[in-house]
Length: 397
Image 1 (cartoon, rainbow, N blue to C red):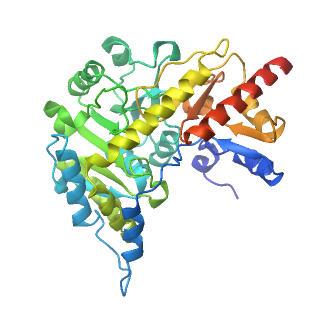
Image 2 (image 1 turned 90 degrees about the vertical axis):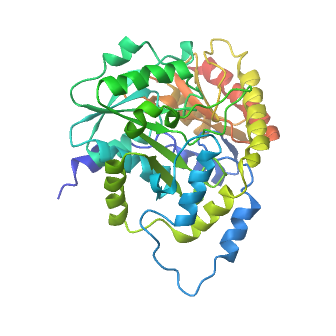
């Protein structure tokens, strides 16, 4: 028997596929610093845990397919605090941001149609596109230019009769780039001109640094019915394991289509929605100390890496990732070697090879993604061990 072509060809996660090598190192007593994956060590708010502890009912019943009313209202209120006019009737709760992306792709595209995405991009977009049987067309950006969006004409050249949507992630995973209002305006004008949808992954919207401000695509009123925003509590409240996300749309046809997808999978998890509600009820003041902590970590990482001979990088404006180009040819080999062969005082580091964040073959082989998700002491140590490993690797290969 033969399994489906989809199951054979779907991309392995470049973030997770090398994890068995790290597990083996740990089993041998080696300490591994994980800066390959966006798993923050910021403490999950106590109010979230309290919601789980208090969530005892006689029967743990199905909830509404679109999510509980109080959580949907709370998310709408959260966006209203940023002068974004949505209501709970524009919100559907999903099982993490992952399902929100999958639903969005499926709502706007049919088999064989295209979604245009700047690369490097969050690698799991490839998986969601495979599930939806749609094709990703990559718009390649350059680390030397800080992964800024190109001219309107260059973006437009990638649009074909099969293009159904453009997806933007800002603040960006994996690059840390935050798109300016002018950059967003280029895309907005093309979306309107070519009758497209604009899908925006804004799950890192709270993490913008140096006094700058995130601009949501929901603020562009003239395309309000073309916009779909993907949201999640995973990084916002350091609740990655809770798996609560949302789709926000003011297009009634998109909403009703996604609602039918939601009905097909029954409902998002009930207890986790109670925890998410408790998190949103903390208010936006919660984010300021968290933002400052991530900015401090960003500065530590950038200052620690910038003196590496031959490195190419830009200082991230948001999220908690950076893509760096290293003076080596095969970063996946380097990452594996760090886990299997390199030890510095019985410690090593795991980063993510960046090739898997590109759609275009051959791109990103000399780049890695680092997630600055560790507290200061551990991050500084991870940088020290990483640099020692890179120096040793370059002397051998």
